[in-house]
Length: 114
Image (cartoon, rainbow, N blue to C red; front, side, top):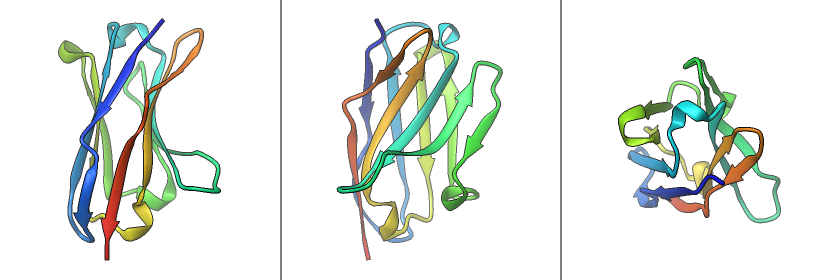
């Protein structure tokens, strides 16, 4: 069982920045892939960014050049640095971890005002 706890969401003006954190209850060395997803009402959850055990990253086209996913093994934490935020980035952001199973955090709200 892996518990994921997100933090760092909030309200920010367009053009601003936020950093989301996802703390895992186990060593992230044991996790094959960690990712951030986001979801708005009435829409499917979409992949924002991912990082695999080898350190390779992947980003949605809509956030490339603005968001950066990173990790700190010592803290068992994955981060999502979000810069140049736009109102369309408003969503609930979820942390995801894949081992043999898939785990989700509880989500953190990000609201970008215009």
